[in-house]
Amino acid sequence: MPEEEPLLHQLGAYDPEEATRLADLLEKHGVHYEIETDQSALTGANDFPGLQFGVNPESAKILIFVPEAELAKAQGLVGQRP
Image (tube, rainbow, N blue to C red; front, top):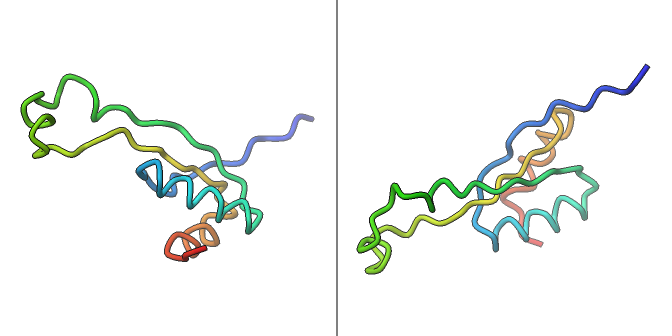
């Protein structure tokens, strides 16, 4: 019987710098994670002048997902500094 893949929960959506920090921290503590990118902020919904003048600072985000069994542990690590 094949193993079922664990149910993943989104830990959050982060800018690349914060996502890199969290990925390192999760690895250090042995928490399995998966990442995806969310580029919806970069679609045509944003007006170019707003981006050009810095009044609309939205950018692509990195979504981090962890298994349900490790969610509480991962949430506890989010606020920690390496």
